[in-house]
Length: 197
Image (cartoon, rainbow, N blue to C red; front, side, top):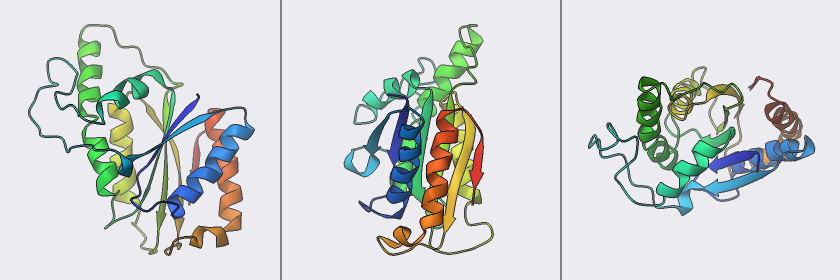
């Protein structure tokens, strides 16, 4: 497996999921493979800000996030896909991101002990769809994702952003965007920065 893809929409077979599948076609065309995880199918509690991970780099909350830590640590490429809800990512995506605080502390502790090595191959990618066309519609989500990937010990490797699709299946009408998403997937697996909107 080369890519771990997290779907953050509560709506199954929605527009951000359709866009993600197009991008993953590109990943496969470039010789990569992917595991898809639907966050809304998991029970991930919010971070409780208990400070438990400060000294250990491990989250004390035991739920469906627990096995995801090792998956994140062991992979070099991650995709997070989320539609825009009120100028940010969905609640499911945000809960997942907040729980990466443990990974940020893990990285900090390893840096302090001299065990951490930056790996430029480790890169995160963001996919998002917004029904409205506000000039700053993606800005909050992108900033959130940049810090999330930093917590995961990854560089921000780009994003694919589409405005307009609203109802389930609307993404099918955006054939050019789907084609561009496939190309973006190839670029991502080959290590090239991508930003499309």
